[in-house]
Image 1 (tube, rainbow, N blue to C red):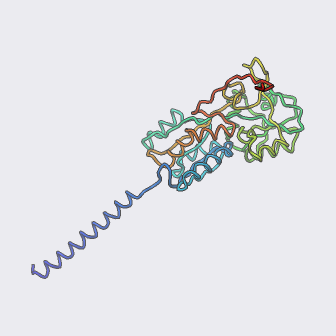
Image 2 (image 1 turned 60 degrees about the vertical axis):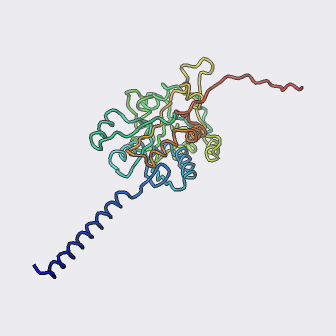
Image 3 (image 1 turned 90 degrees about the vertical axis):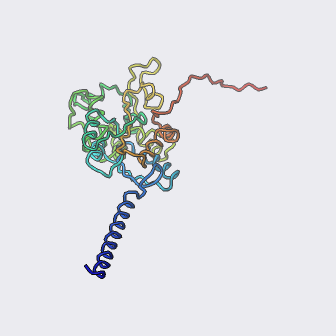
Length: 318
């Protein structure tokens, strides 16, 4: 081989080696490119529609605190949220009324080789709402069961927040029907929680079931305005000694005096410290828990004490 050929071969090898280094460098850059962090980046989450008011407030405060963070929330029936958790790789977190089950954990461990985190964030209540002109404001669980099964002679119908498996329907099935079946002639389904309230506002013979965060916040002007058209009914308290019927309040939820209480959980499909982890931490610590409290849910992670006090009618003058 001549010296010219050797030089050409050396040049070709140098070019090949340089290209190899360039490709390797590009690959390494792609692997090391910064993604989301606990306080920056963009993620998609799916949220049970019945918690939309309080989660919108949580996201607003979180993004205001961390301008580099963007949380895209899709508000859906609970079953659709859980479907996203299983089948949508882009959905990082879901917020629903049930924790991750043992079978769910096993499925994820077998398929993605880690178990998503699941924690309770707050306690919520299903509020029974009636038209502002209705005289029926006292109910027992048996009354509701009879209405839902058709055993009642009343001509009232119960309105739910969706056509498919919403959390309110599942909760009513588990906690009110207890094995019995709905009478479809007594049940009305509308698109979402807002439409439940709008329906009740125009029909004196309808009873609605919605999450308390849609109607229980006296500091929300839209909810205060809705309370001129609908009102929250009382449910019988089987453990009370002072008041036989109670409304869903933070106090009645925390003491379980109100019978229709459910949990609010996040399930996080993230095996590193990303934006999902940062938002989950925000929801569990002081500011997030105070937002739940301000929205008249009962925070699960922060302790709020209930104390009896005696107030003097008159202030003594010195």
